[in-house]
Image 1 (cartoon, rainbow, N blue to C red):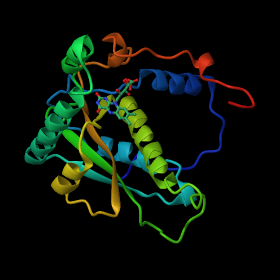
Image 2: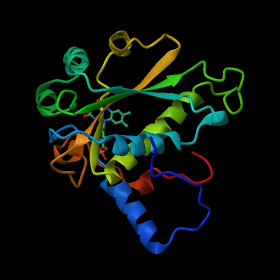
Image 3: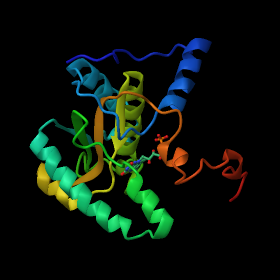
Amino acid sequence: MSSLITMKESMPFNEQEKESFYRLLNARRDVRSGFLDKAVPDNVLQNILAAAHEAPSVGFLQPWNFIIIRSQATKQKIKEAYLQAKETEAELFSGARKDLYESLKLEGILEAPLNICVTCDRKRDDNNQLGRSTQGEMDIYSTVCAIQNMWLAARIEDVGMGWVSILEPMQIRKTLDIPDSVEIVAYLCLGYVDEFKDSPELETKGWNKRLDLEDLVRYETW
Ligand SMILES: Cc1cc2nc3c(=O)[nH]c(=O)nc-3n(C[C@H](O)[C@H](O)[C@H](O)COP(=O)(O)O)c2cc1C
C-alpha cells in the first residue's frame, strides 16, 4: 500500500502551508462520540500509519507496532474491560465531581469502525542503546510521538481519533495476545465523525481549564 508520504523535503514552508499546519494543531481533537457508520478506506488508514512511522524515535529504533482491530467481538471484550476500569476509576471521585465524571463519554470503542492498539517493542534492536542508556523509557516516548502524528494525520483526513486509557493493560494484552516484552502504549478509536468540536470536551463540560502558557514557561532554571 502506498501513502501520501513519499519523499523527504528540504524546502521551507510557505505562509499558506504554515497557516494550515497551525490550524491543524488547533483543530485536532480527542474524539469519543459522533462516529459514523462509514469505513475508513485503506488508503486513508495507510496515510495515518505512514504518518506514525515518520515520527522521531530514539536511536531511530522505530519501536512501534500497530494492531488494527475491526472485529466487533474483540471490541466488545475491550469495551467490557473499559467498563470495569471505569467503575474502579469512578471511585476516586465523589459528589458533583463524580456525577460529572459519570456523565462524560470517555471512549468510542464499539461505535468507531476502527480500533488500533499501538505498542512499543522493548526488545527491538536491543543492542542499540543510543540515547537511552541513561533514560530507558525513551522508546516509549518515541512511540507516543508516533501516536501524536496519527492524531494529526487523522484530523487532516477528517477522521476522528480518541485515546482510551481507562483500561487495564493486562486485559488488552490477553485479548490481543500481546507478548510480555511488548508494552501497550495506546488503545485508539478511529472513524469518520459528525463533527469536530472547537474545544476539548473536558473544558466545555467543566472538568478542567486550559492553563495559561505563560505560567508554564520558566527561564534558565525551574
Ligand atoms: C495519554 C492520553 C490518554 C487519554 N485517555 C483518555 C481517555 O481514556 N478517555 C478520554 O475521554 N480521553 C482521553 N484522552 C484525551 C484527553 O481527554 C484530551 O486530549 C484532553 O481532554 C484535551 O482535549 P483535546 O485532545 O480534544 O484537545 C487522553 C489523552 C492522552 C494524551
